[in-house]
Length: 302
Image (cartoon, rainbow, N blue to C red; front, side, top):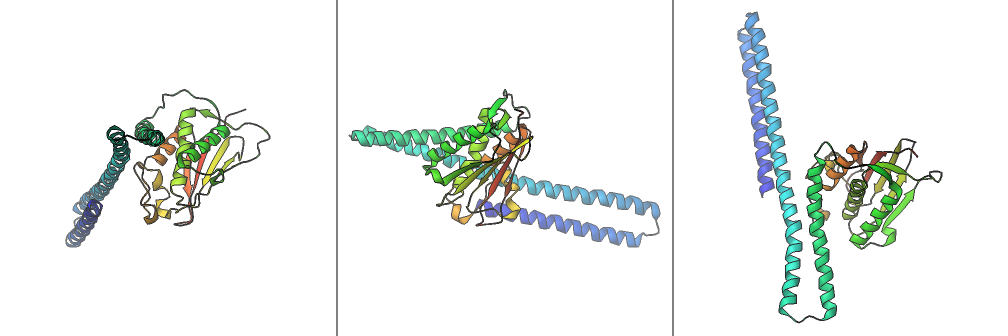
């Protein structure tokens, strides 16, 4: 209801802005026709008219952007609230059960496992928010070192399989030939691990029930390494390809309505890539055609 209301507000202000611009143009054209012989007045009239139109256009654009940002902020708050509230409610339920009933030892162990899983989920959500806050800083404030990027990608794949309870064949790794040399990147290992894990986690979440993710690590030249993560999931509309790296932005798809998140994962990936002198972008042929996330980083000299 709130989203539809905000969209109605955006449409209203757009129509208002267009109407005001049209009215200003009509008044100015009429004024020019009536005073076309007065050269000086005509010149200043055109200048002031251009300034008024520019101000109205800028004001309308700013207003629409603020409304969209407010809508995304509300969606983020709702998502974070759900991500915090759900595991807390689950932990409380299990603790109340343990307190009020005599539970068999096997079932107790299962409750402990579920509560630890929920605690990990809470920790991940809090860390995502904190990383997003740090991503906006111009300086990382972290020491950089030589990182074996190939091994880091393998570790992140293992962590992703464990988190989503996937079979080994669900995530397939392919490393291009590198003449036996280790693919290294100079950067912060923790930040790079966060970026790779977020890309893999995003690919799995938007793959649906049939997870088939292919991970390719390439070295096209001596200066770059390229990580491609390709899924066979819901895909992305062409107009959303660049937007998915914005803060709070989440792709809406009917079949993926159950997928929860903060909308910060790919924003953090982009920030980390830029701080390491690289870039990240997405490729998709449209809905139902899958998505490929490409992460490019400078290659460290051997």
